[in-house]
Length: 133
Image 1 (tube, rainbow, N blue to C red):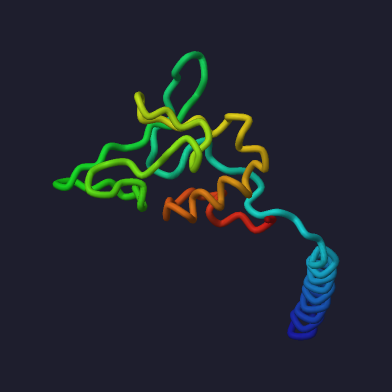
Image 2 (cartoon, rainbow, N blue to C red):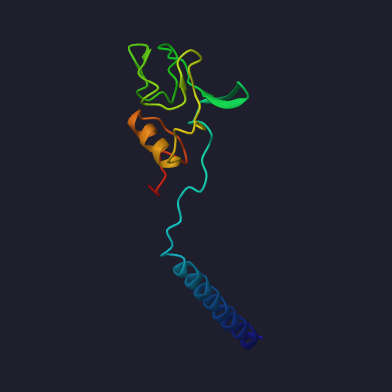
């Protein structure tokens, strides 16, 4: 009986080594590929609400509240007033305090959004950590 267990153990170890070698080769063959990460991102920055306005999905900028601060306002407010402009933020609507990130002026897609998010210290998973710019 001891010989049987020894043979089974040796075969199992050999199979394990072969499987691990195969997995290692598959992983190493994908190392050189420049795949953008993350592959997709949310429509709005984290903790911002996506609302429909004029048949378009836009992002509602959270209001400033000193008593209960919002977790993702970054530096878009200064002394209670918005620092955003239509020049610095394409698709910005001051009256409704929204941003249309599908506006055609966001022409470089995630790269321009990443620059904007980093400029205003906005956390936007999939954009502020995008690696293909």
